[in-house]
Image 1 (spheres, rainbow, N blue to C red):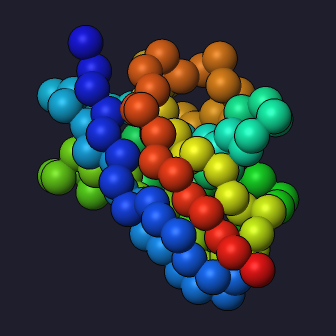
Image 2 (cartoon, rainbow, N blue to C red):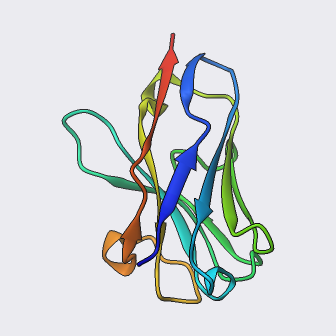
Length: 124
């Protein structure tokens, strides 16, 4: 069973930055893609960013492109989400996810394991 633990969320003001981290227990972490998703109150969970197994390929939702950066450190079994120029509409619970796939996907169904989520609140 893969365990994913997110950290780094919090309450910030519009324009501020946060860095989320997701630590994985999986021994084969370095073989698989990782993703970040978010869910705002009353809305469906949506794709934010994904990275392939070695970090060479990344994908972003249009709403975060140019502001967020996903990266990974396979030696530390950790994936990061650097969030800059935060907006109130970025407020949500952020989840990391692990898929048994090498190349990244924007689809929720591609990911088998999910963290418990970390709250990000951006005030205006």
